[in-house]
Image 1 (cartoon, helix red, strand yellow):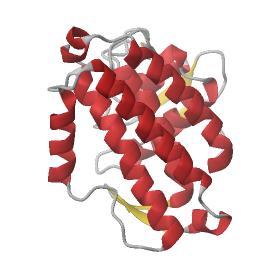
Image 2 (cartoon, helix red, strand yellow):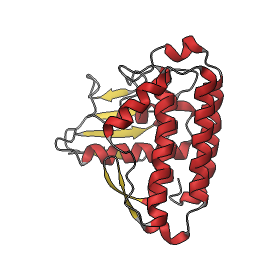
Image 3 (cartoon, helix red, strand yellow):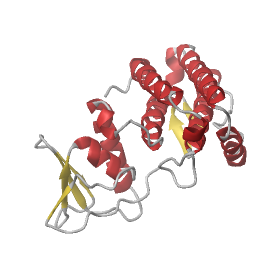
Length: 238
């Protein structure tokens, strides 16, 4: 998948349209139902996605203007906004998602070329502005899965899946206690190695299932392990 933020906006627009179609199908009971995220309803996930778009607008504005503007005013404000917004009626959720997505697209369009070279202060630390569009795409696609609706990892594009898989593998490899595992993608001779290859189990399967398992969004049931044994438990992802 390209790293060019302007080219990636086509992927963001398509992912946003899919998300909005799912959100439009929810009634009040659907929104109050549990998501895949512990302690969060679907309403929490949708509120988070809207506030996440606002947070990325802040970071794009910081990159464009040089202002010291954080993604969120504070983690407490972020949590309160998500909790407060989670119980809104379906129409309010949908309007908020559309509005925040439009503002994000406008902020990307307003970026001069040189601003993409800036570094901004994201929630987990400094982040290159050039990766903000990828970050938004990742949020939409992964949290769409978290809605526990009719959307699966298999619905991700191949390019998104492979980039997410590599990113998650790199994240785990750089952790304090990286697991030792070899990931083998169905239909490909290519492997992704995390940790020490010697003696590491080989986990094989379709790329979407590998990626979803690696980020803690699936139990890995379709995956195989060689030598035969239990599937390893990946470390916590971002």
